[in-house]
Amino acid sequence: MASLLTLLFNLMPQRIIGAAVMRRRFTQFANTNGLVYFGLLHPRDDHEPIRGFTANAGQIDNYAVYGNIHERAVTIFERTVTHAASLSRKGRTHSHTWLIAAVKHNVERSPHVLLLSHVHPRLHDEAVAIHHDRSQHVALDVNLDANFLVYAQPSDMEDIRENFNEEVIQQLLTKPGYDYEIDSQWVYVYSHNTAPKADELHQQFSAALALANVYEKSPE
Image (cartoon, rainbow, N blue to C red; front, side):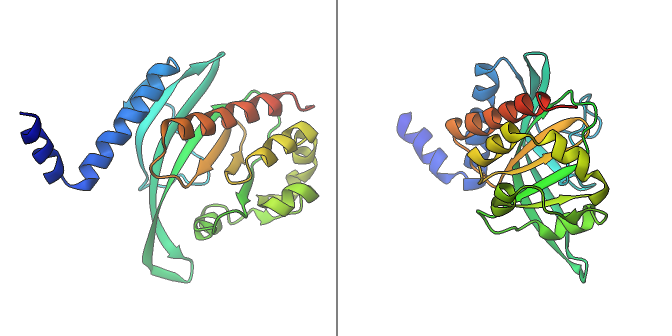
């Protein structure tokens, strides 16, 4: 029987095997942290939509985990987006997948800011240009600017600099390989890891929680 199961397993397409492995990892992560595994999300599902700069009408959110930790709404999931390759090449499309961890914050005045890491190729620059055409590349902090390409609306810079105190900056610099986004409600941490292991899920989720904690301590 064991050899027959092994044979059947070896005959399965790799994408099916990979999806099963991912479901197991996200389910175990949810169980370990007292969260709920939802899997593939549908527009009709009763859940708060997670937006951010990757939000797209054709997005596919999978392996979604939702819940609350210390009275914070939290989630981690995989998002695949297909969009126009660029504004000048509208006939072509590009697909990209992110692993997204998001934590709701309670900062009252929180303008939108996006930080794209210099560590990896910025495969999503076209998406930023499409979805945030009113945002501009801005100078925020010398250390952050050395590690990230920062997008924001110039009119918001005073509030953003007030919220980004030294503790927030240091937290961002501890994980310069992630991309970060903060809007009026959520802190988002992005990676391009399409096959996260259990410890990698924990690390990214912990980074989002830690950033939300220090962000809420910033002066309002």
